[in-house]
Amino acid sequence: MKSRTVLSLLATAVLLGAGIGQAADQAEPAPNPLDVIPDKMPFNTPYGAPISLQRAQAVAQAAVTEANRRGWQLNVAVVDSGANLVTFVRMDGAQLASISISEHKARTAVKFRRPTRAFEDGVQKSDLKYALTLDDIIASRGGIPLVEGGRIIGAIGCSGGTGSQDEAVCSVAAATIGTIGK
Image (cartoon, rainbow, N blue to C red):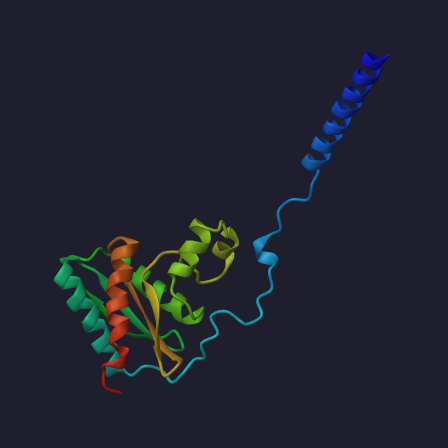
């Protein structure tokens, strides 16, 4: 009698175990990270007065100086706070395809008020493919907003190297904003 009771209990445990397993299989999927509602607006740096030609040329020259120091041939575009091209430099030997890409990176950085690396990371690391459906997106490093006094005055875009090379040169150039005369 005891053996039947033990077998019956084992059978019940197996059935319950299977039910638990099935319930786990039917559990809700993980929440979508896009459903998270932030308390504050991300990338909310306000736009400021547009960068002047003189300052834009100085930023572009800082990029060229850094690229030359590293032996890289790049295209460099600087746009104002309205995403209008202010100055462009094509270094000797820079690839032709990167002319429009450098402008696109600068325009994306200023229009979306964030470095283009944010889009690259979103697509590559977070599987946010929807970003590729948005107008004027380029999901490649090398576009950085130019911020002065807490306001975006323009953006710089570099292209012709790897994304990390483009970004390194843009970062050096963008850092000069505080040192270039107004």
